[in-house]
View (cartoon, rainbow, N blue to C red):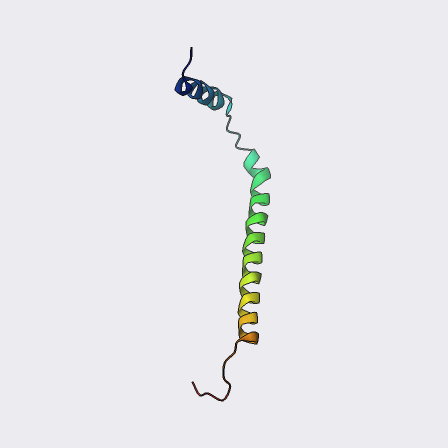
Length: 67
């Protein structure tokens, strides 16, 4: 009877055996990766700017008080 560790080792060996590195796939996936990362940074930037604008617009500072 196989132990849990032996089963996991067999599955890992089978998985690694099926992995194949294809250099040409980078040409297809890299543009999608770059577009996705730029999109993430743009959305984060928009959220930061919106938060900053809302804090400036709705802050309860005393306008008569000198800084």
